[in-house]
Image (cartoon, rainbow over all chains, first blue to last red; front, side, top):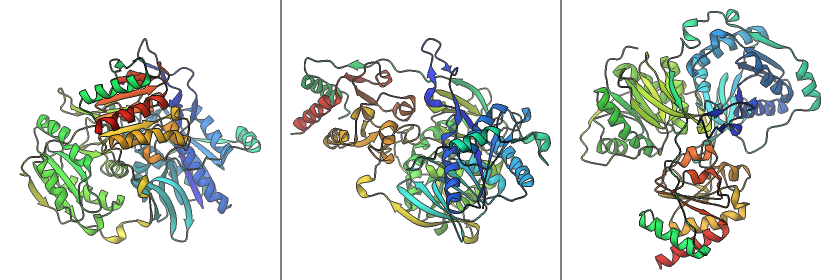
Length: 268
Length: 334
């Protein structure tokens, strides 16, 4: 089986702080990481490979040159080969333009690899944009069926069986191949890289793909100009006025006071 | 696609029994505001099976018109069937914009639909308005885990699409049902639905958690210290008739199941009362609960950001205060 995993390099949003004076995001010193949800997609592919060792896992990222670091992390964990789609013409793309470029880049990777991917795995969403749109938008560009919120996937005679998170529990969805699956956080921890794989990943060749490499790329559908949506402005959400701190002589008295306040506010 | 109408559509997702999901009714509130500014009608789009109850509810809560696609293949959501139906409707009626509830299904369907139509979609919005200068919708949404808010526009493509978080807007009041109801006879052949439900694994009844519909939520975070720490949280919730919530920290530690999680990667809630116990108030958590009417913070650390959004705070040991508050409530109820 051939699986392509799409990954994005993102700033670790857990490390982002707000400057209390300027009320803006402090990005300096914030580490770049593989989007955690993409890590779950990679783990899902690795688990398929655990059971079917002839599976090949290819990772693809779109981003600047430094996104190679994220791809090397994926090679160290489980990927067999990595590609980076990088070009100024891709910059400023919204989710729709991104999915379009990725669909053309996948065609190029398939040509270079000499295979057609049976499945495209993506993270549910990236933790910087939080849109969860690129996966389904890409599935549509490829005309593949999609399954979102996947937890685990297994190969079956009729396609993939995907355990997915539903609103009131989990469900197993059968989907025809080729397909696209997006993954969310499973109950298990993804594997760590081995030292040996880490060393190999450091030296691995990462193939770059530019706009000129993509056949039939419609540049009016890529980058800022190819994006139907644009960001008009951004702002840091306002903080609320400080509330009332309850502090009586004893805990019981504080509890009583709090009860009175909530009762007066007609919320209990 | 050429826009032929100024109508504002609200997608109304249905349950398997044909009733309406709350968010599709909630969105009639901002939908009315946008429709008036756009100078068009407010149209509810109902897709499902045996949807009479949902159609009535949309009509009673203020839709001018309800367009219905009803069929057995729509009883359970599938990407292929729902996107096909909406593609058909959107091309036929060409409304200027459509709001979709940002439920798991809405967020599966929205991007697929926008990609098929080649138009813009804004994800998981928490604010909606019209740009006076251009008449475009201003979609406000959190990014970077809620650290930053972005205002998005889709100036040159129609329809403008957006998914909107459940629980952000309140349902409009119900009145007499007076919407024009249009039934569209649209069906999707079985062989065009490429996914199949093989098995459902429902959570045990005591694990079913309705955070979005709750009036009162009592949540625990890292400060509860372990799975047993949630006992005092549950006792308070029981006394108040409240639902138990949790922060990501508590869920990640495995102290309570993910279905209780409030925040960026959990549920967005806006109850009348939210009591945060031992929750520091990471941005990700605040993003999911800061629109609650009244917020109480109970935390030993006075510098915890949760106090920044709280209406009432208590600085101290939650294992002393929470049981004392439970006792007060029980006493008052007699």
